[in-house]
Length: 163
Image: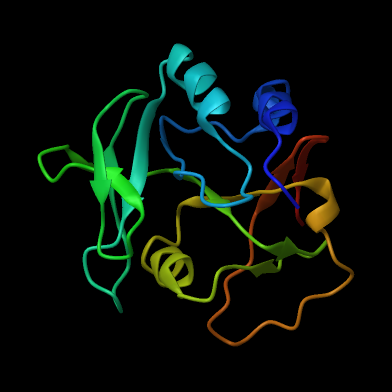
């Protein structure tokens, strides 16, 4: 699946379905992941604080640093573009996370590094929403004990909460 600017822009039309939160974590797109930057612009216009995850230790939860479109980024320990160390560290209330696949029960298949699962475990009050193409939905994911389910999914076709 290749990255689609049209699908990324379509996310903007579904921003109203997202749970309310004053601090929203996004991600820097990698490979074919949906690009959340068009969504970031709208969230910022709504007055929400934005942040990006930062891997500072391989086997520890990620931290989040305040971020705005256009801010300089540098690779974190995992090689992913992240805000500079001088950016304020914040705790997101809503975490938008990329994924490889998801199921109708909130199961999420990530890249395999465990960064998001460790972070979700460390921030149990944060609302976890996957961002994916609708075509990434599968019937059933076999989850490991450490895998933490999502509260919802945002695709180019809309937002859906998992019960």
